[in-house]
Structure formats: structure tokens, C-alpha cells
Length: 110
Length: 117
Image (cartoon, rainbow over the protein chains, first blue to last red):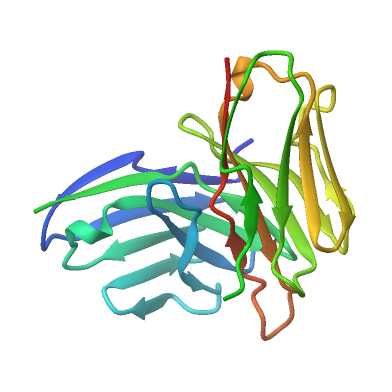
């Protein structure tokens, strides 16, 4: 059973556009929601994270929007760049347990 | 530069052979995870250790997979016998103790790409 559902599976965006990746969860015990970025041949690395007591977190061009009542959260990449082309994983955590979405392959076209 | 180290980076083996993957977690981290990454399933949790004790290995096929932490600096994932469907990238990740101030972020190694022919 997938604890975290992620969509879309793949995404193609023009340079300068906005990339949006969505995730949903069921378990209300989750208290930490990170996003990981993975480049080919590398391991995932933390990109940005949010706790459920805030509705939005912004770091540079990356923003997490969090809707606690809907149990959904999303990653927005503003002014997308070719260097952002990677696989993005959302995750949900409680304690030391982490549950990952299935990943979104983002391609930013120059 | 603290990082999770995994060996081997690449392994090609024949069906039926034993495969052992090794992981050196970041010093001071008390949690270690093994994940398997495939195109279809994304990141699947195989095993999870805290303070070297196995806490969850429900995602691991017990008949052929085993995971251990012989000491705090080494985690191993063994497949015996290996099958073609085990072909995937296996990631080890480690994390520090979760506190009110510390989210216990996971740090991943670069993975071991396994191909079973």
C-alpha cells in the first residue's frame, strides 16, 4: 500500500515555466514532509521540507504548499531551468520512518 | 565531508549467485535504511535499523534477502540466491536522531546498481 501518492509520473516544462508536482497522504501521524531531488547516477538529496504547522515554505525558486485538511502537498518550481531536470520525490515522515512517493521525472526544455 | 558510502557502485552477476552490498553510514547517525529503486515502484523500503537493531524489514523478501548491521560503521544487504527481478539500484541512507529541533533528515549514498543476468 502506497503511503504517499505522487503525480505526475513525468513532466515536461519550458525554460522559465512553472513546474508543479503533487502529493497526497492518508496517515495523519506524519509530521514532516520533505522533497528530495535526484540527478542521474546519484542518490536523492534533500531539496526543501515543511512541517504541517505552516501552509507554505519558500526557498529561492522552490516552494512547498501544504494543505493539512486535504492531506495534500505540492512542490512548485518557479522559473524552471534546464539544470532542474531531475527526478523529484516527495516523502512523509513520523518518528524516523520515511515513506516516499513514486517520483516525478522533470525535464526542462531550453 | 560526511557522506554515506556504498560499495560496490555496480555489480553484474548471474542468477543464483550471492550478492552482498555494503554501506558505511555517516558517523553519529543512528538510523540506517535500505531502499530499492525501480522505474515502476520508485523507492521501496527494504529494511530499517535504529541503533543497529532491525526495526522494520517487512518490505524485504525474507527467503532470499537479509540485512544486518555488524557494527555502527557497517550495514550489509545480502541477496542469496539472486534472481533477474532483483535488478535495481539499491540505496542506503542514514539519519541522525529525531528531536524537536532536528528533523532527522535522511542522507543517501550514491547507490549500488545491480544487474542479475
